[in-house]
Amino acid sequence: MRATFAAFTKSLNVTDLRWMPEDGFSVGRLRIELLSGLTVALALVPEAVAFAFVAGVNPLVGLYAAFLVGLITALIGGRPGMISGATGALAVVMVALVAQHGVEYLFATVVLMGALQIFAGVMQWGKFIRLVPHPVMLGFVNGLAIVIFLAQMGQFKVPGTMVDTGHGMGGGEWLSGMALFMMLTLVVCTMAIIWVMPRITKLIPAPLAGIGIVAAVVIGFGLDVPRVGDLASISGGFPLPHNPFGEGLGLYGTALAPFTLETLYIILPYAVILAAIGLIESLLTLNLVGDMTNTRGGASQECIAQGVANTVTGFFGGMGGCAMIGQSMINVKSGGRTRVAGIAAAVFLLLFILVGSSIIELIPLAALVGVMFMVVIGTFAWNSLRILTKVPLTDAFVILLVTVVTVYEDLAVAVVVGVIVSALAYAWNNARRIHAKTRLSATQEGAKVYEISGPLFFGSSDGFSELFDVDGDPDTVIVDFADSRVVDQSALQAIEAMAGKYEAAGKTLMLRHLSRDCHQLLNKAGHLMVDSDDDPEYALAVDYSVRTGILGGH
Image 1 (cartoon, one colour):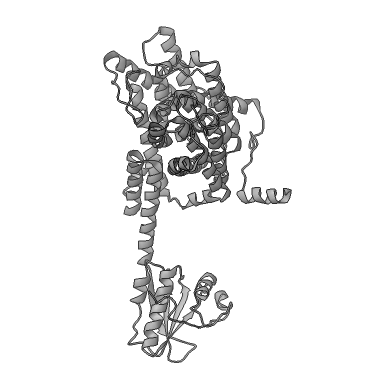
Image 2 (image 1 turned 90 degrees about the vertical axis):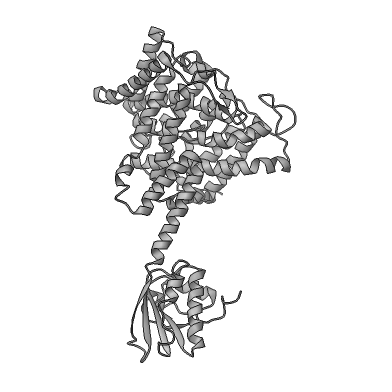
């Protein structure tokens, strides 16, 4: 059993789970990590409350999710320094479920969502994130920066004027006059402090200094500006175990979710969508943080960590979550590099809920908005605007497309669309690469050799067929694949069809210099009349006859 578990963990490429794996323990490193965690925790409060409002649930549901998801992923996640919690990308999916069935069905969905994410991690599906092209990553970063910016607009509304629209909290009156002027002034001051602080001292993270100085000014002078407490009270108790399945009423007066197939039919579609969005956002954030910190991470391990976090959160009355690019950027910019920062952020957040709510609720929203605006500036890939005219037109289009779809739809759809467009563009470009040189055979008198260059697949199969002159060719034709690859069924179909044309004309088509994978593909399909492993090594130029009538039927 121990050997099996060791082999399993080795196959997952488990990232170092030590709290400080790189620098080791030191007072200086611990101070940086704790202060970074405190900064992240302060920024998490209004985000968690706002996303809870978006989903149409109690603010504590969002805060508990931020604590539990943040803590568990910090402990066992695939990338130290990454921050997870309740996110808007998931909240917008949850709102319809909560409106129709109640919050207990949301808890049940989060549990199932976590189980699906664990399954994805065990199956090592996280590695497929490497298929996401760089233009899609740029579009993802830009789109998410815009989404973070737009999410702050709600803080410029008069507290208490937002209403439940049936699809989450919306509406509200915009600040005006002196209130708007004060809000904007404090936001700009916070941003200025964050920009100047690193040039003065790095003992305190710049975002924390910005929040602290602006909060001190507002509280000291008694300025009448929106504060965290105006959103909602964050006071609460320790999150306790809660089973969302059963009969009767749950935590917030709504019906529990019966443990039946009918419940599964209701929650499964939401769980699949939430699991996909959560993993895509988490894995893309994992790559982004890795690029910034020059560290490696475990994609499959992150999938499992996200799954465990959401499963546990669902059984503790939380709304679930995933990686948060904004808070992750705050952590990285503040110097957080180890698991200590993420753990500290979760612990500080819990302390805010249990004993520090009266203090945290005094913090002006303008200070937190200023921090997030600086995150937006740091997150947006400004160089992508400069390179739009220098990269291929398709890549420029993908960057813009993913950015727009991320803003107007959601992240998962944007990434899938971007990958599909990139894949189609790649297929089209490769389809145009196939061509052939012809010569007389040096080994078989009178035979003609077609030296194929470029991959043979569904996109290039028609072009492959147009390379040959069946009527004008001699009785024996040799197709040399030394500079080509046979990729898929369309390629097999094209080869068989061409062999059939030569056969119908009383001529013979032979294949030469098949790579090992091409040899196996053709041999498995039954097209090769000779089975030899010499030719893939190119030690002996074996000419394979082609058996027809295998794929030609309808």
